[in-house]
Length: 277
Image (cartoon, rainbow, N blue to C red):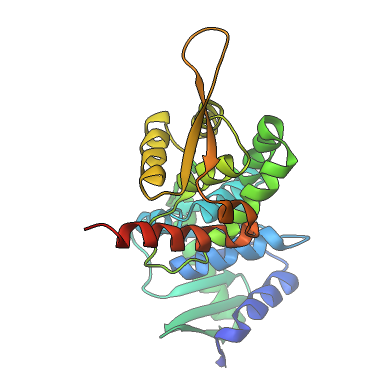
């Protein structure tokens, strides 16, 4: 068997995808591998369809990352990736075709791949897990596909808002893992504040697209106000209560590059919380 260290992981997977002539089946991927496969398929100009069998807890852990969940949903809606769950799975992570068997082994922060050259062995293992696939249960994604999110943002708020949202979404998950101040709901409100959007409009959009309920939006708005990141101004209407326009509480949040928005917001929020008695 040939070992390839983590830096060659993506290259190894790409080679399998390019040279394979049959169906590819991935069994028991870790959160890291499932995320890597998702990103690889999404950025590929000609993605090869994958079937994935996982345990439900791993999928739920992976889709806690809203960006990855929306990407998985996109691939599922296009028929590029089929995701199923099973209760009985091997301890190792496998990528299988009828003539190729790759085992993924986690070693610290690295992943080692072991390729089996025996076609007869690969075929037997593939047949076993192909039968398991037929007995497994389809996992239904509830997060909207990223294309639906982009289209709805463009229709509702325009290209500038959409661009800010997508860039910020990408940067959100590059924050330290210990940072829990921000999620996709806070992201929506911060981008809305940066673009001067009405609270009513962003709340309605977030609820319609499936990001959060209006109650969740309201709670997150109060939190962002409490840590001095956003504020509101009244906008009179012809009848009824005034609408609230979301605004940034600091000019630095307006001026910083959008990819630095969360780091700037973290600094401001930290200053606010550190001053509490």
